[in-house]
Figure 1 (tube, rainbow, N blue to C red):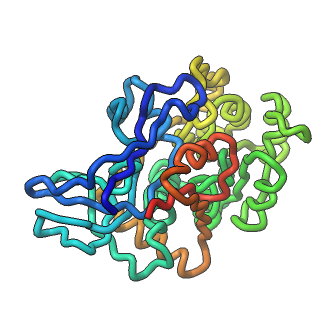
Figure 2: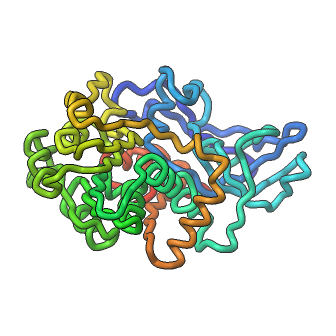
Length: 342
């Protein structure tokens, strides 16, 4: 290729992102900086966290500067290098951007990967990447699951949630998943082994009232949930908070229902954390980078043993980055959402 296509953030979204918030531009293919290298991106991860990075607001990472490519974890091949540790042809994974070629400075987050043991390099963005490791470390380190405990997972049909439920079953938990729509609820039980699936939508496709959803959770977990793995927030979290077991552990991994909401209303039933002497712990996978080797090896072993199934929803083409990204918020994705660039 003679040009580098880049999916740029043109303006800060207000509420739901619209196409005018982005632009697709071309630039020359970059050359390596001294000590750096250039990566030809093959796959990019599309994640709810990217929506937060688009806002000019305090977060665990700086906002994406206007005019820069949308930040993303990518898997690709070293195209050119001025670094003796990264040779052209090496497969690597790193935090780069939605673009054909990314320039990587020395000392960054990019690392070499061995793709010989996987069916697709995209696995390093799903089961053996941040998705699988978020489920692994979030549930095991913070949730501390014990056999016989009840695990409640929101966003359970998503990439992280489905992995959490399966790891919970391996640990001997009774698993309850919340998802939107009959097909996703069917998959929770048939594909991912959840004991119970709860649909947060009514027959008309609208979100159920908090009281209705809370009653359905209570029926499935009459003694309350010992562990809540939270990916959704909003009304779903409010319903879950009304169904905590004594000294429950809540793992706050995501709040996808609130990312596009300018009001950021938050949960109203937090008083139940006091009543049940529960704990709520925020979780970021970045805290566990030094242990990625441990988690990746265990996830690979469970996959080889048929104990974990991780589905991928691979969308094609950088020119389709916007509609692909919006699948996250419509619930259209059917697994870990990945954009194939090369």
